[in-house]
Image 1 (cartoon, rainbow, N blue to C red):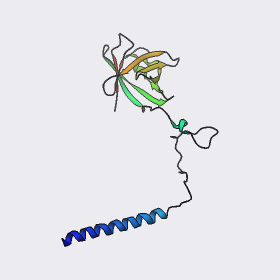
Image 2: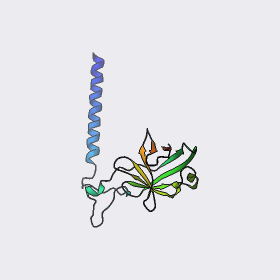
Image 3: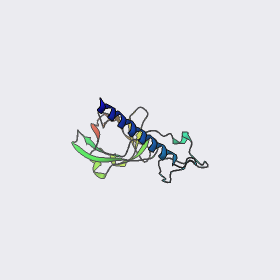
Image 4: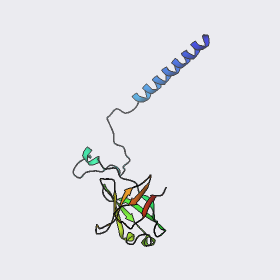
Amino acid sequence: MKSSLVIVATALICAGVSAAGLGFWASSAPSDGVTADPIVLGTIPTTVGQSHPTIASLRTAPVSPPAIFSVSNFTRKTVCLVERGAALTSRSRDFYAPPDCEQVWPGLTRATTWTQNEDGSVTISDTGGGTLLTLVRGRHFSYEVTDAADADLALLMLP
């Protein structure tokens, strides 16, 4: 019984010391108002003509990160690597297919834009906006071609 009183008393003393320490630490902080963080990052957009961004200007659509995909043509038994790169708009990203991808799908090397559509499909287009391929989400991190009947293509995101 005596040992449990010692344990309870020790716990109460520790809690009191912690509370006093936190109170002292909180009161020593400057109370001159909120100050700006001196680190400037490019993650918060600034608006022209305003001293601070509005809530509406901070809202952006979720954008998938840059990634490398393996493109497989099952009919031709060929594979190449492509890159979905930097964001161009809220729905489109830069796209690059190296010259060896011409063997996988003719014209794939002309692709420059990866656009995420509202229905979840993806359009890969050239510089003129012409659609080269339309993809739908497959299992896990893969995409399958839907618009070309003779295409047996799949894109698999690499880790």
